[in-house]
Amino acid sequence: MNHEFNFMGRDLKRQEIIGFLAMWAGVASEVQVSLLIDKLTDPGKFRRKYGEPTLAADDPWFSPYVDYCCKWNGPVWLLWDYMVFHGLVNYGYNDLAIELGNKMILAVTTQLSANHNYWESYSPDNSLVDCPTNYIWDSIMAKLLIEMYELK
Image (cartoon, rainbow, N blue to C red; front, side, top):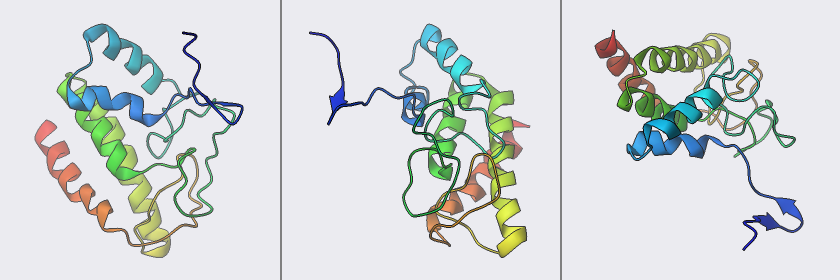
């Protein structure tokens, strides 16, 4: 067994946001969490201005642009970032969780101020967005605000 993970000649091994869900589920060991936190706090990978991207910024397929529907190669999806937020809280990284929550709030308030819309996804690096608007799942922000208040 060579542990290759290829499809149509492409290596599918990627550092994606889904890797942090082990913390949300509470199944990561302390050693694994330490490795995940290193990736999460690396500005060249996941630590971005408006939240955690779906794909590490140093991946060749990464794009910070939200220029059509359903992109999973870089944009921030608030529900996924919320699960990362919860994973951080699960393991006692409350300061990092609050920092992530503040980035999510910045993404939302930047767009609400500019165009009065919630969006399907947000750019991790800039305020340009061109994807479907007014997604109900952005209502997770209400729960996030309550939980951030409780953490403080």
